[in-house]
Length: 129
Image 1 (tube, rainbow, N blue to C red):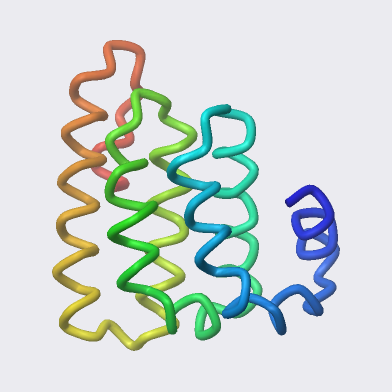
Image 2 (image 1 turned 120 degrees about the vertical axis):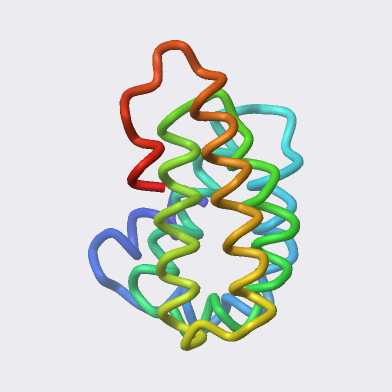
């Protein structure tokens, strides 16, 4: 994850050629790993991948929403919620707003907005979501 994050942050797109092969593992790490640091690193790799080439990540869009974005959007951590929103926006751009993903996008926004209102330290990011 660290190597992928570093390469993608430097706009080296080679890891994207392996995205489809690694997508299942990446989603598992970003959603199910025991350690928050590892989950965050998985989200970072998803964010950088979706930013560099939204179309590559959008091919796994439904799974990304269901396994990672919707559950993580419920996080008490505002940074995690914002990363989910940013990934989702890139996915929607990469799939031209397809109807199935639009419904998942709506579900994710609702989960993030609800978590945002439950977070007493949250800023006024609900309108951004």
